Length: 161
Image 1 (cartoon, rainbow, N blue to C red):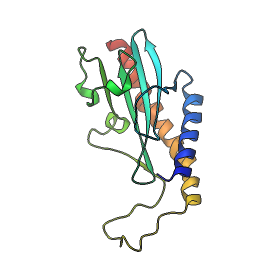
Image 2 (cartoon, helix red, strand yellow; image 1 turned 45 degrees about the vertical axis):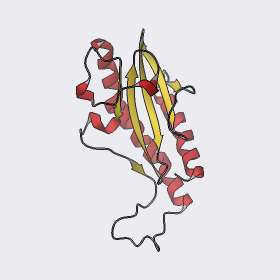
Image 3 (cartoon, rainbow, N blue to C red; image 1 turned 90 degrees about the vertical axis):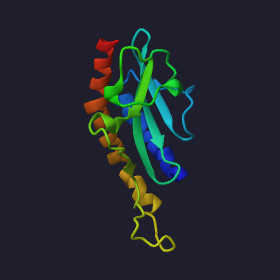
Image 4 (cartoon, rainbow, N blue to C red; image 1 turned 45 degrees about the horizontal axis):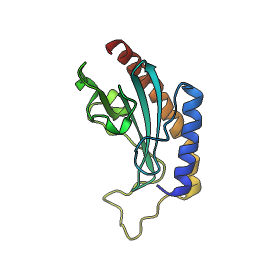
């Protein structure tokens, strides 16, 4: 993602996430891909929830990951799907979209995507201004999906563990 756009996405996401879910705060110690961010909260003693903003290094897009851990270490979370979690697991993480469509890996695209029909030598991506204008609506949609799918999932985890 272009750096000016990534900065706007990170800023808007942090603002909206902390406004909507004040128990979550940024985890500055987690190991996560460059430019991306992790937010966490303690669900109950020794059970932590994570929400990750994953910025694409290839294009102007982002996705949301969620996870949980018994030791507050997101980078040690086991990659799995929501229905694969058992009582013996110590952690888990997956794309938010897996809560509502098991095979979907959903990304929010902030600029025009190149298709197979486009000529790579003449393709023109969206201007930075056009892409910046898409940030608020895209972040609001992501926050709504977190509210609809992730928060109830986290509430359910509290009763499972």
